[in-house]
Image 1 (cartoon, rainbow, N blue to C red):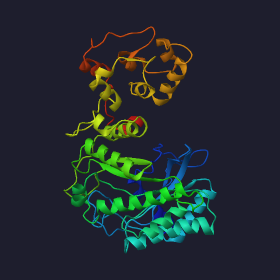
Image 2: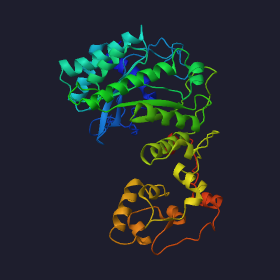
Image 3: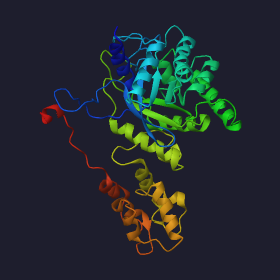
Image 4: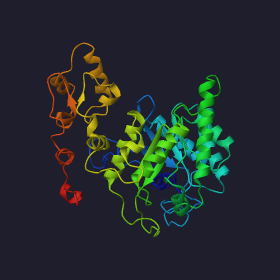
Length: 410
């Protein structure tokens, strides 16, 4: 099989991994037109480094052959998709060539399980080792680790990769047993724990060998099982606390042709994935707990309003909030005020009292914040507007779905 054919198959197979978000750029090329270049090239995606830089990565699988038969996975053993496998040398060459041509800044490499977990992990480590030691590659490398692999191999991976990730895929042990019987949540968490210990050792001994400076991440599939958002967020909260993950990514389940009956025939609403990312941001950066966003009895996040607005409407006893007296972390909980503007408001009130017009100059969403704040010259009537009325007024307007975009373009 030609290298380009392998690249087409293995880059397409890697697109379902959301822990390295794709750019989503529209397709275009230069065929029959002036200029050069195309956005349909296989395997290029955008990701963000810890310091905020956006980098383009070659995103591929080493192989989409797999011993496992995970029901939600397009590359499962029983799937009839075209199969391909790169050699280590081919991945190294592709990464080097793409980098030298300025197509990409690094590599995101995952793989199906071939022969054994240890053998597959050895192949992934060998790619990273050759890039670093033979070709002196200084670009970004993200390796997907195999949970069942020898911890020594995962430790070696951390020496060469910037980031490691172990996908937990589903939020509960029961779901994993049902849809991915060859996998074990216990084994996955052991691998996460091993990576965390190496990261802690590196933090305590800065002169010790390099180990995954961008930390570790994971991914959960949304909508492949019956788990609700409360279970997903609770699992994410536990993973952040126990394993110091940098990110939990959420990937809406995509039904594929000839899917088994154990998974849904239709995907979940894409807005559900979006709301989970918003709630995840509240957990990581705003100090929210999962139990504040959804009750322990379960349930899904509202689709018509964002999670912070939903929390504020359910806790009207905290509002309206006096911006000239409130703590900064409570100001950041006001719908329409982000972390940066909360800091700006605190800085401003050291000089003078905050006025309503100041918030407009900070480009806060005035419609959203008005019922929830008090300033030196603004005091909304307390509890005169019902939460349900506010919710209807602030809900995002539904949009007509675009059923035939190709016909409209034509």
